[in-house]
Length: 324
Length: 237
Image (tube, rainbow over all chains, first blue to last red; front, top):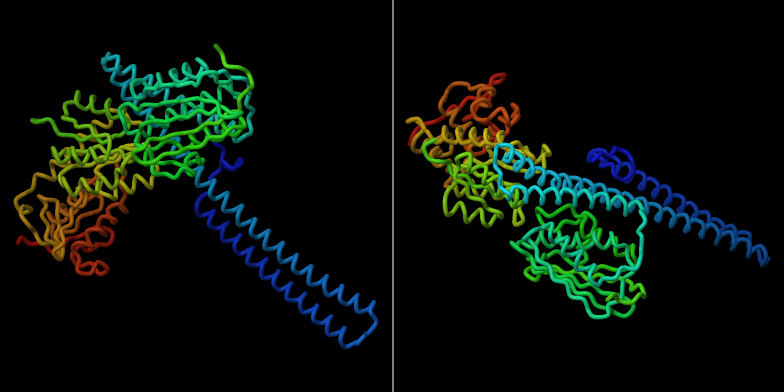
């Protein structure tokens, strides 16, 4: 992966430089606040002087009194607005800094995770290729090679899709009839994992087609199945996908019988969020959520230790009738 | 090798673990494959391995913590970390924890094989104690048992890593004479580990915490400026 340092948000600041920038930003905010407070104090003092001058002149002229009062209000008002602006800008700067730091840390963790995700199948491929070169002719080695090459391909696809989605890449929405297509797609995805997953699809009768980008739905399903295979802690994880109409929407309920996770539902699907010590790049479920939202739908995840993992995907119905 | 060496491979990635285990078996080792930290614990309780290949990232724990446990349970076992994270911090952490070697994925099997053989050789050298090192010897305030890789200090027993043991044994075998840093590096580390003089110094700091009455003013393991270290006190109990 070739990422040029200093281009956009993909550059990762060295820790020492980040600390220096944080110290300078804090110094700047303190300086601005002190100056602002001084300016406000000066304005209040001027307002007092105006009041005193007004009482000294003892003017009974209502026009002059109104002018004094107006000047007093303007000075106080300006100082309050100035102080509030300073606080708001300082807060905004602090928030922007925190957000960029969080993104930089996340990006660093992401690159480390992607490196891990690429190196692991590469290790396996190299071990098998060396064994074949030394005369091992078992078909099992070919099966593992295929599985590892699929894993590499999937990781590369996810990384590219993340870049595309974050860059505002378009989706092609069309009417996708689920009858037949959903089962074929899911079986195809499961086949890449061999005996490590078995899938079952249940479609309610008369189910309308969905309005979606078919390639995006394939990626969503692929990410969910990969997530199940990776975290199930089972030799073979069972996946069940049910589809039914729900008002103007079509609801896909995905569920596996894996080990589940203690990670809170709100945290599942966060960009760069990783649930387990050896668990993926933190992109798969984020892409599920992001792609669903881009298609005008919604994804919700739920899981608990010992109770598997589940996802609810809500698509807009396209209005076209179900297939035969 | 008269008996095939017993290896424990702890790797949660199915394809890597299975292929590695098969290839090591073909190379003449007896191999047990564990896919999690929990299964690794069961495996070493059932049969003590001579060498463990530990993946750093495991689904139910991390390899560094597992190494510390394994070190306590089977002190003679050599430990080699396998990791896909090649960053220097992790490598240093692994070696500081007393790993005998640290291999970054992807690796060439033959290179790994060579490293395993080197580690087993060093572990075997450590197990073969000369007469004066047998039994319990007192070094400073520690009662050291090189056969058991243990040091007892103020009634508390500490497990010595292979590297700590190797450094301390080398100094003890030349008690009263200075041993150069280069010689310590040469005897206790392999060239593949890319150790530096600083690595030796870190191990000396750790050993001083065990043997010195006051680690800030070391008298048992003295620094000889420009040369290395000298062990002053050692006697049999």
